[in-house]
Length: 127
Ligand code: FES
Image 1: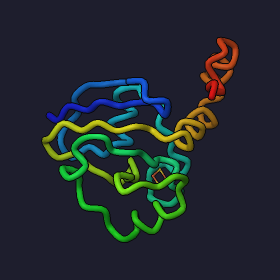
Image 2: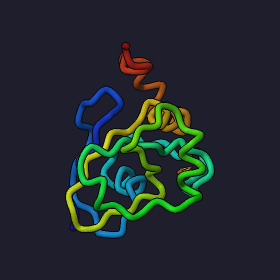
Image 3: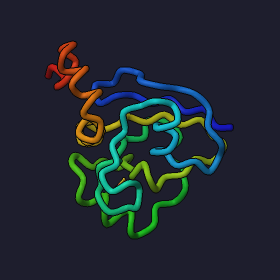
């Protein structure tokens, strides 16, 4: 099973573990407990699952045209950007960083956790 290491938008490691090959990055984040947003529920129509792949980019499944079209709508797209709901793991170790856009979406989708983070002064993050 490929090892996955996930970083938050500020570069701090948020989660790590192993998931089965064939798992997409969004599902890996969910299974490992990372705050990875997905406004469309993982059907390649919103771009909020955008991540920057730091290691193992070439081991991921090839992006299809639909992913590239949606990725164009994301903020701060880089050559190493992927949509988490579309990029599937092979057997190689992969590291990726959840974007600010995606983390914000996750908090919007999880109001209880957002209120707790606000109460602790953890959200919104200090710049
Ligand atoms: S969750 Fe909407 S495009 Fe991936």
